[in-house]
Image 1: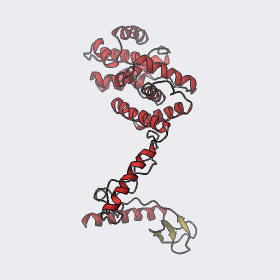
Image 2 (image 1 turned 45 degrees about the vertical axis):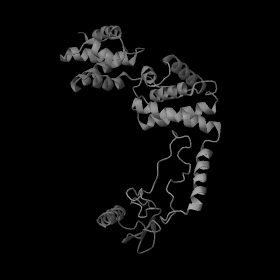
Image 3 (image 1 turned 120 degrees about the vertical axis):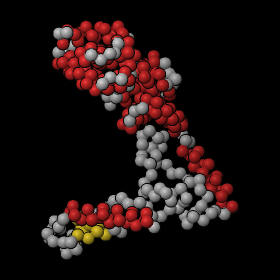
Image 4 (image 1 turned 180 degrees about the vertical axis):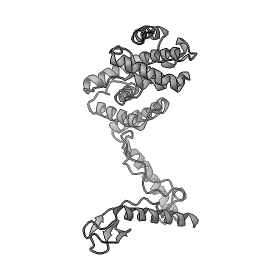
Length: 317
């Protein structure tokens, strides 16, 4: 009862804020404004002019059809997503053997409902394309969870794989390799600092096979990837090696000067970022060796030494 009163109070506050934001009627300049909660309209009580219609109901759902819904009365389900084989639009028959009023179903109807559930599940993956997408997106969910990437990367990877499936690029090739290549392409497109080695490490596919599928996607789908910015890799390497914020900012300044003098052109972004962090450690007096920074960046010590020489020439140290 207390929870219901609190929800009603929140809803009343929302409607009051809405009326206050509109103010007087834009047509007659009078008021007051009246909200029709049933029709979802905001109108003037003087002239009847409808200021806003189809106002979204942000409050909770007051009806509950099962025990699970009593604590969660949200009005919407999961959002539509490209990373689901049916985009989240398929209907699902619930596992509760109860009707809309909450009463238990008769025994004679339960067997019929159970068969409907079975055929509903089968009908969702009836076509070979649906089976392919279900397997691919199951792998996508596993890899992105290990790589710890955002929803934008997941949606972009699902979009790239769907386009590759439409053009017939999956036929004769490994689904795992192609979905891994799609994830890497998505990371490159969204400028997420994940290397080809990182994707190969979390998948059961060789780095060479992922690179081959990635080149195929670039060629056949005419993808244009942005140049990787070395500054995007600074935070990742610094957090892995435990460097301070002052060192990170100094490394960003070094990379900015390297970009202005065109020294960074054609260089591996991860190696360049690691070298800039090592130079910043030397300048700030932070006790980190080349091996520590190289292991955090996933590059060799030779790479850091080579990039270190170029950065020293820029900074005159």
